[in-house]
Length: 266
Image 1 (tube, helix red, strand yellow):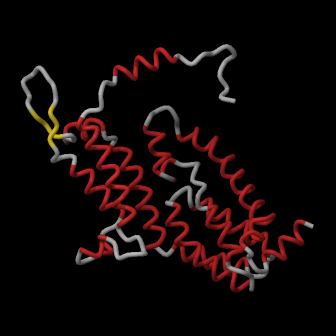
Image 2 (cartoon, rainbow, N blue to C red; image 1 turned 90 degrees about the vertical axis):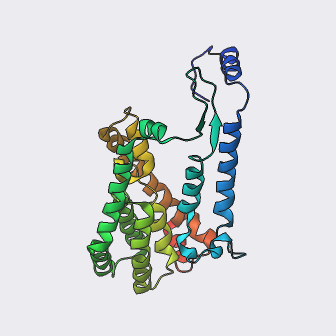
Image 3 (cartoon, helix red, strand yellow; image 1 turned 135 degrees about the vertical axis):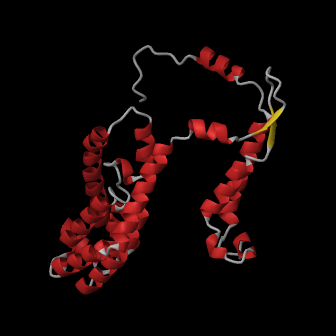
C-alpha cells in the first residue's frame, strides 16, 4: 500500500539510534510545547461565542484576532532565557534570537505571500471584483442551474489562483447569492459549489502560502505547479460538482436544487 520496493524492511535499528541521539526533552522544548498549547487555548477562548472570551478585556476586542495570539506567543520566546552548554564561555541566551531568525527565515517566501495579499486587495479596491460580479449576473440570468453553477465554480477556481481563497469567497459569494435570487433558486444551490471551488489554489506560487513554502525548497518550479496543478483543479471541479448535483443537495435538503438534480440524475 505504501509503494515500497519488494523485500524492503524499515530500518528500525537506525531509527531507534536516531531517537536515542535526541536525548532527553530539554526545558526549552517543554517551554515551546507549552506555548504551542497556550496558543491553541488562546485561539479557542479568544471569542468562543458561548462566553465573552478574553478579547473582551481589551478596549478594541475586534483587533484581538488569531494573528495577535500567535504573535504574542512567538514574541514571548525572545524573552525566555535558555541555558546552553557551550565551550565558548557563553552563559545564557534566549530560546529565540533574532540572529537565528534572520539566518533561517526565508524572507522571499514572505514577499511571495505578501504579493498575493496585495493582489487580493487590488481586486477589491479597483472594482474588478464588482465588474466580474456584474458580468456574471448580466450574462447568466437566463441559463439553467447546472451551467450557471459550472461557470461560477470555474470563476472561483480561476480567481483562487491569483488571490486568497478567503478573498475570493468574500467577493463571489454575495454576488452568487444575488444571482441565485434572480434565477429564483435556493442560494445554496450556487453558493455551495462556488465556495468549494475557492479551495483549489494549485497552479501558481502566490495562490496559497503552502505553494510558496514548497517553491522555496527549490525542488519544484512554477512549471511543475502548472503541470500538476491544472489537472488537479479540473478533477476538483468535476468531483465537487458531481457530489453536489448527485446527492449533496439532497443531504443538505436544498430546495429547488433537489428536484433539479433528481431530474438530472434520472
